[in-house]
Image (cartoon, rainbow, N blue to C red; front, side, top):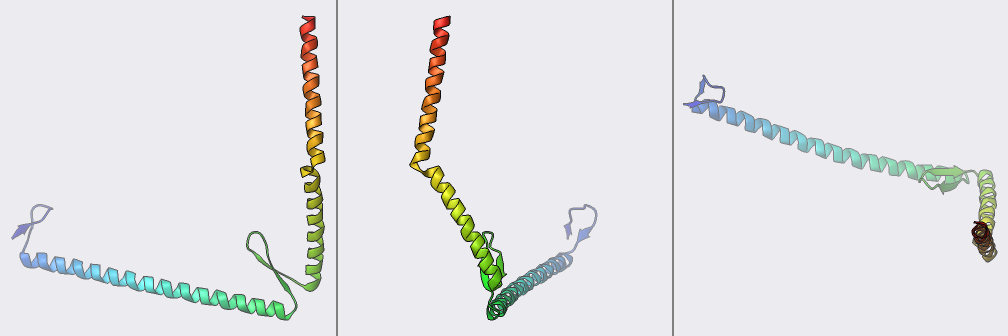
Length: 138
């Protein structure tokens, strides 16, 4: 006979073996349940991927048959434009790019750099003259 951790009552060897067997069988059952849940989750993930792929294919087929144009924005969102919407969007985009191009041309051009250098040089000369004038006074 063996004494358990709680003190007073004792367990027989048969009771200890029964307890060990029960715990082992519970652990085996838990492991099987976990394994089945993982298989089910994997199956569900695979089904979801197949469903999403079919949805994308059908969406693409539907819109392209009707002449729509697919566009993916910066964040990865897919937008479908009708031919009229696409022409309007393209013109706005082109106009915006031309504005952006012309602005960047002026900001990065040599004339702008020369102007900035000339203005800074003028400011430095004025500041030096001011300090020289102050030194003469006092």
